Structure formats: C-alpha cells, structure tokens
Length: 131
Image (tube, rainbow, N blue to C red; front, side):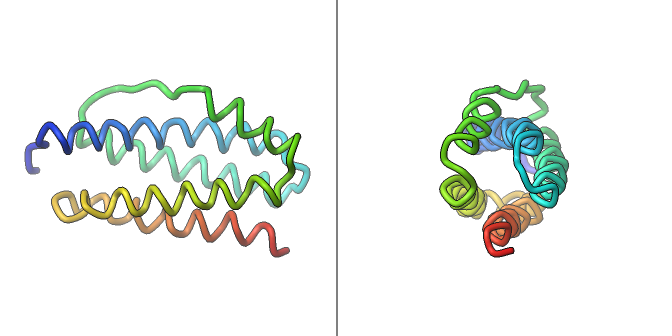
C-alpha cells in the first residue's frame, strides 16, 4: 500500500471522522423517525458508514471516536423541521462526500466502493421522500 502524504493523511482522517460521525447520526435518526421503513434504511446506512470508517482506518491506522454533534443536531432538526426539510440536506452531504473522495480513489482504489456507496446513500435518502 502506498504511503500517505501529509495532505492525504489529513483528508483520510477527516473522512474517517466524518464516517464515524455518520454512523452515530444515522443510528440516532433511526430512533426518532416516524416511518419504520425510514428507520430500517437509516440502520442500514449506519452499518455501511461503519464499513467506510474501517476503510479509512486501514489507511490512517488511527483510532478515532465519533463526535456526537450531528447525532444530536440531526434528530432534533427532524423533530422540528421534518423529513422534507432534512432529507435533502443529508443527501447533499452524502453527494459532497463522494465528490471529496474522488481524488483519493486514484491513489487508493479501495476508496472507490466508499465513494459509490455515498452516491447511493444520497439517492436512498432522497427516495424516502417519494414513497
């Protein structure tokens, strides 16, 4: 495996942290959403975000802890604003993550599946609005 440059290391640590934070966020969101299908979807996304974090952990070799900010704020936003407001924001973050991972894929092909999952996550969250 190629050695991480300082810039790549910083990007991968940022990505790893984001994935860990997303695990907690989706787990907490699953507890508060009204629709059981949404809850199941968020539990599945949480599990996939955990796998993503492990991909970045293999690259960084650092153990990080999830931050609870999004896990507190996002369920609160759901309760206040509802899914029509919140889900597009979540989807946009998933798409943005995919864009951010694109340059990393060239050097570290194992990140490609993570990038593709993020696009699918954005599509999945948006699809919850159309049922």
